[in-house]
Length: 140
Image (cartoon, rainbow, N blue to C red; front, side):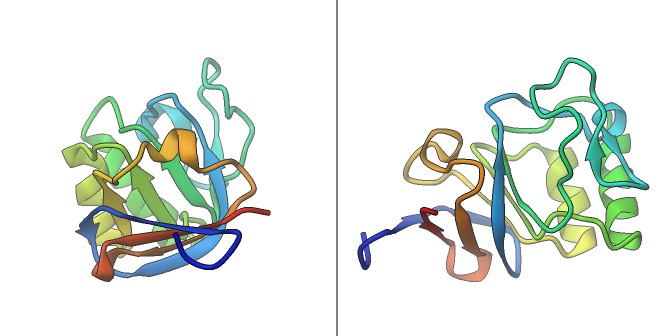
C-alpha cells in the first residue's frame, strides 16, 4: 500500500514495457480471434459481458485468453492499426496472448499477489510497469 488512494501489487513480467490508462475489467476469458474487431478495437463476441466496449488505450484486465492461435495475429493487427490496449493484465497468461503482446510491444503482467479481476474496477486509473513487475491502481 502506498499513499492514500493507491494500491501497488506485484506480479510477473510477460511482455516488457510500461502502460497506463483507464482500466477495462472482465472476469470472463476472451478470444481475440472471434471476440475483438481488429479494425475498431471493439469487443464483438455476442456472449461477452463487455460486448461493444473499446479496448483501445485501456488497461485491459481479464483472466486469460481462449481460442485459436490466430488471436496473436489479431493482437498484432490492433497494434498495426494503433488501436491496441495500453497494457494487459491477466490472472495467468496463455501463449496466444503472450506471443501477440510480446511481438506487438504491449506491456503484459500476470500472476499478481491478488486477483486483478476482483481488485481492479473498470474506470480505475492503472499504471502497469512490467519491467518492475508492478501494477499501481489509483481508484477514481
